[in-house]
Image (cartoon, rainbow, N blue to C red; front, top):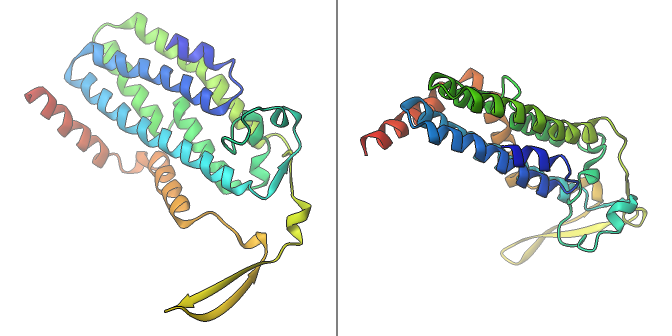
Length: 246
């Protein structure tokens, strides 16, 4: 937990930041496993499920952000100096600066996921950390609980830095002027017979339905868990009983 929280403060690449964030969250998972009670095993399973949902959503959102910026040019010198800038469209935290002004909905989905990582109530991540800390305190792990709370506060610093970059700065992006005058053509075929010709501009290009539906479902799971907690808690209870019976 200490390694993931402290070293995460020095990162400027967003995927590497998520990697150190994972190390910090693994500390919570190991804390729940080390207690080895019915309550802690349930907390462990619940934490594993919620973190998988949040982490999956975060990376899918990064993919969506990369696609949405395809027609923009980045003016930041930091990005231009990257030797591996062609490996991935989004690599630096500074690349998502002011993204709220480009795509507010996707930015809000990212904010919900980041706040869940930080354990902000009433999101899914808050209840996971609460369950682990409750199990630890009930078993007398007071010192480890204090360490967990302290590292959560430290990790919240770099999570809030991402939020600040997205919402409180103006974007460094501008639409490529060569593409604004570009007309794209498409043909609709049925049984190899031309049915319709389409002409559209880059404004008509949006994220695929697969990405938008997946992001929407995962974000709503994180956001609305407080209203329907029975299903997920029931699953974790069944898995916990099964593990103890084994």
